[in-house]
Image (cartoon, rainbow, N blue to C red; front, side, top):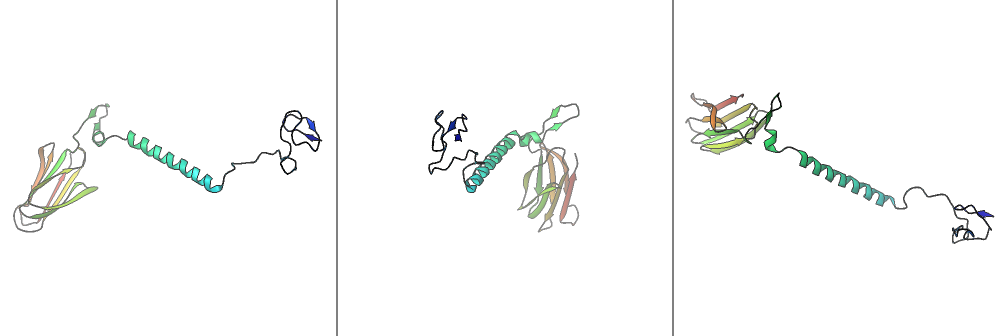
Length: 178
């Protein structure tokens, strides 16, 4: 006798289906049906890998989207939060470097940890990507001529520091701490 795994009814050895509940008792080749459940998915390893990689990619894209949309803007990162919790806003680029020379020049300027390198001819000015509390350094060289090389640092449109070549040197260094 073959006992039905679903309802427990005793069926004959030749029965393919349970006489009580119509549950299939044997496979099509006549062997008794293995009632143990197969473990895992019935898909290949390549499909499993593709599914896992797809889930990882979707998770990374979701993380990237959330991260980028929760970061403060450039203007917000330049604000100062004081001890009492009040916020002092600054302009986006509070510092401007002005180089005044009648010839070719080269300069490194900005926060000493992140200097921007520029070269040019004649007078020019550059917005410095520094916060209002950063230390500012400008190191300028003249390539040709003996004229005066003048360097100015403006904060919100006002000159806060300047230096020039008053001697025979071809180099001007300007350091500013707020």
